Image (tube, rainbow, N blue to C red; front, top):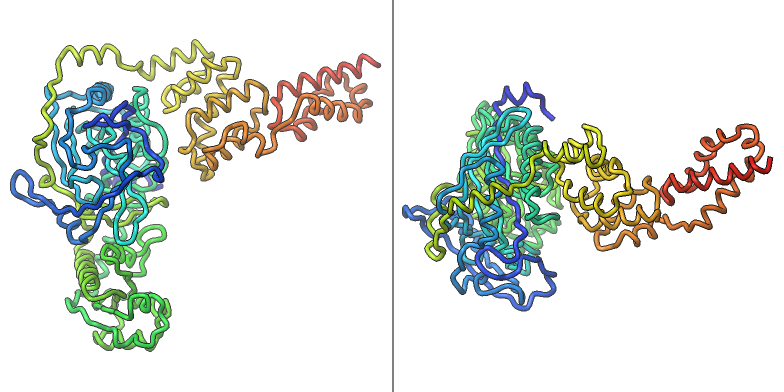
Length: 629
C-alpha cells in the first residue's frame, strides 16, 4: 500500500459505483422471478446482432462505436422463467414498486434527496449484455453524504436499474449470454471523487455494503454486488475499472491503477526523449514464415502481418501492473479482433527463429531502438488489430488514455472500451414516470433500520459484549446473521459468534479462502451442530474452509470429511486411558492435575469435541482417582 504522502503527491482521486441486486419477488420490468437458473435448464436459444443508435441530441457514444467494430454475434439462452420482455419482443411493464421502495430506503439511509418523480432512461450498451442494445436506468435520488474517518464522501446519485444478462463461455464465434439474470433490479450508488487513498476506498465500499444489507432486502452471495472504481491522478486521466466482485480487492485495484498510470507517465517521458513515432504501414510478412516452426502462425494458416513502432524497443516488455507488461496493453486491442500479438521485444520465441526475426527487422529497416509488432491472422482482422495497436501506441506518447478497463482477479486490469459519455443516454418512452408521494417517503423514513450506534448499545446490553466486539459486529455486514444465530442458539458464546463472523472470516480471506461462497445457512447449520456438541469450537475455521471449497456440501458432511466425528463413549474411553497412565501424577498434584492433563486431551481431541465437555469428563475421572486414594 502506498503512504498518505504518496497519495497526496500524485493527487489521487477515486470514486465508487456500487451495483447491488435487490431481493425482490419479481424483476424490474416484468413478473419473472429473480432467481438464477442452472444453465443446463435453458429451453431455447436465439441470436441477435446489435448496432449503435444516436442519442436524443443526434450523437453516437464513443464506447458504442468501439463495440460496433467487432461485429459480434450474440447468442441468448432463455428459460421457462424468462419472458418476452427479456427477449425484447414485448414492451416493459411499469417500474417494480417493491424495488422503488427499497431504493428509496437506501437513499434516505445515505441522507440523499429523493426526486419528486422517477423517470426511466435508456443507456446504450451494445456489448450484448442486453438484448435490446440498451440498459434501462432511473435516477431516484441525489446529493447524499457518507461520513468516514478521513472525511465526508459525497454520494452524487442513486439509480434503480435492471441487471445485465450473465456472460457465459463462447460457443463457436458467438458471444453467449444467459437471460435469467437480465432484469433483476439493481441499485447503483455513485460517489463523488472524494476518496483520497486505497484504504479509504475499501472502507467506503464496506460502509455502503453494510448500509445496503441493513435493509434486509438485498441479495447475498458472489456476483450479487459489484463495484466499479473510477481512479485518476494529477498527471494521468480518469479510468473506470469495472466488475470488482471481491470487496477485499478494492484497495489493491486502486493501488494497481495508480502505479499503472505512474508507469505510463514514465514511459511517455522515455518515448518523447527518444523521439519515438509510429509508422503507419502494415506489411504482409507471410512469405517469411512458409517453413516456420511456430504453431501460432501455422494455426493462422501461415498469415502474418506487421508494423513498426520506432523508438519503442524495450517498452513493450516493461511491467506496468502485476503480471502485465505494456505489450499486454497492446495485446488487449489485438485480441478484440481475434488476433494474437507478438513483438521483437520478446522474439525469438513461440517457435519463431532469429532468422525470421531478422527478416522482420529488415522489411521495416528497424534500428536497435525500434520494435516490430506482428499478428498471426488473415488480412481483415489483422488490419483492424494492427490499426488499433498503432492508435494505442500513439496514445502512449501522450500519457494515460481515458478508458474503461476490466478488473482482473489479481488486482490488475485489462482494456475494455473508451469511456462512455453523455451521448449514451436518452429517454425511455415505454415506461411511464412514477411520482413519489410525500406520504410514502414519510412512512419509509419512519421505518428505517436502526443506526449503528443504537445497534451497538443494544448488543452490549442484550449479549453482554464488550465495546470493541459490539462495535465490530454492529457495523459488520453479518449483523443480521449474528442476531439469527443468537436467537436460535443463545447458549453459544456471543463472543465466539462475533469473532467467527468478523475476524475469522477476514483471516480466512487473507489465506485465500473464498468466503463469499459461504451462505447464511452454512453458518446457521454450523452453530446448530456446535450447540449440539458435534465438534469443538477449535474446528470452526477448518469447517468453514471446507464449506467454502465445497459449498454444495452440508455441515454434517464437512464434519465427517474432516474427521471430526467422535461419540461420547469413545471420548470417555480415551480420557480414562490418559488418566489411568497418570495416576501417580494425579495423586501428587490433586485437582491441579486437571490443567496439565487437559493439554494432553486437547492434543488428541482438539476440534472433535467442545473443550467444556472434555474438561467436565476429565474432572470427573480425576475426582474418581482422588476418591480411590
